[in-house]
Image (cartoon, rainbow, N blue to C red; front, side, top):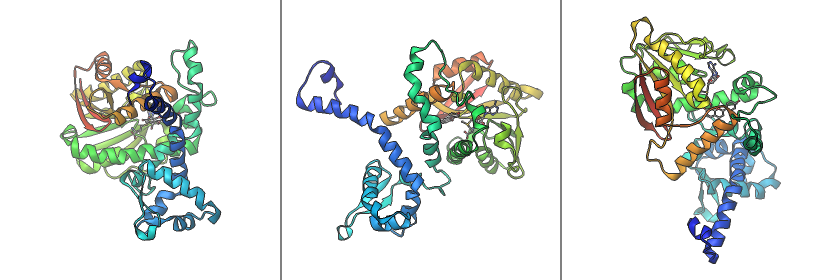
Length: 360
Ligand SMILES: C[S@@+](CC[C@H](N)C(=O)[O-])C[C@H]1O[C@@H](n2cnc3c(N)ncnc32)[C@H](O)[C@@H]1O
Ligand SMILES: O=c1cc(-c2ccc(O)cc2)oc2c(O)c(O)ccc12
């Protein structure tokens, strides 16, 4: 929209209405998000996906086990979910509206290994939405980091006390790792070639390490994460093992360490601490290894408007929920050099994210 015409006082009818709609669009964005969340919670993607061909409203009501009186309300939900790109609407057969899943809709299926519904549910959980109500108060305060606390507990400490949210979050991370691992093995294979041992630092429940280990059977992989995340997890095959520990204390020695979605969780000081530990891990025992980072790099790729908006939204999430941030190449370079590394290479192969190789 032409915002200049509004600010320069071009008050013709269409500019005024356009400007008002622009505000409404953003004010009501959360209604769209919450409606998609409701659809996921109802099991709507599964019901649509399981039907042989596009499904009608009455069939959906019955397969979701909803009272028939809810049909007109479900119709309204479906209209918004379809408009948002998760369902396709088919009206050809006897003028009856029927729905099927779009590619984005299939990402909401719980049995899709790449499922992004868990991330959607986690991001829209009150645990993560509540702190946003306090953002303006924080801006007015003298505090330098927002970093919301949950009942006085910081992010990862809180996770250890809320098993339901922690499981949801870990599942979201694990599903993301399934897809990223496949893309990394396909598009970024060269980064892992010749690596005999790898530590996935803060590697969650180990999906990334398992996929890398499967693609490179000669590689021995270790997943390091906090005790509440890895305790009880079985070693994932011959060449994947779990280690409970604290990455700020010690990281096992390896040819390479992987930091997927870790740097953006932390402020610069903590990132340098983690990177120094990683440097020790890949240079010990006469090694000359590398650190592989998967994270967003702001301004590095020629991303479209929508994806840049996604990056800026992630940055706000990191600011509000954790002490982290999304970084530009210059900001990453400063961290690398402050931690004693000498060079790096950014491979923009993962959409909003990139694979960065950092060398001692
Ligand atoms: C955003 S998740 C990323 C998980 C995984 N790398 C992925 O992308 O799926 C961050 C992870 O950091 C772990 N973590 C937080 N503090 C840690 C610490 N001090 N030492 C080891 N792991 C830590 C959390 O438990 C969580 O699994
Ligand atoms: O969307 C998120 C949210 C978090 C998060 C928020 C609050 C906590 O107490 C812990 C974690 O962390 C994320 C994250 O680390 C990530 O890589 C992507 C998304 C999110």
